[in-house]
Image (cartoon, rainbow, N blue to C red; front, side):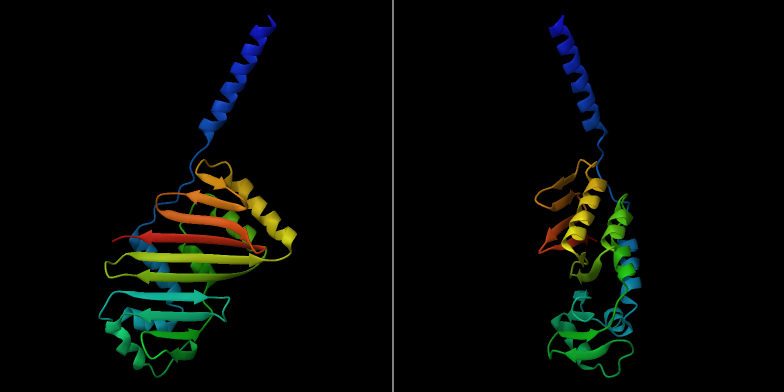
Length: 222
């Protein structure tokens, strides 16, 4: 009799555990085609009239790289192909960007604050996006962004938000984010490093040197 009860109990536990596993869903991003991606990027870069004008007009080659760092005095950096470096030599008047510096070759830099909200908007929507950003924004944070367009018209964007504060607050924010994400089967954690595994987007959140770092990499082929 006792063994029958034990067998029933084991069967019930197995059913419950199996149900829990089956209930787990994969985290998925909303449909996000190239057109929407380019629109969101254009809304960001349009805030810097000087660099936007170089990007949008008169280029001989499609390839270029643009980067922004809030950590380095709001540094904007544009690098173009060899075919387009003449465009950089001819810049005289600037409208919005300060401290223009030409490296004599294929890059220019200047200082201008860019919209953090427009950078965050480039991250595709998914169920926990706002929860993650709200938690990160409780801490002091800076954003880094870079975008590359290559000769085959493949777009790549990298977004990195670095948040810092008291050690305990950083850990609490990380733990809160993990509690939001642990219900998804394609989200893993290892040594304060959360990895979100999807086909289209590379995303991870981790604590490194007592900072909370949120990284997103987006690649869009033509």
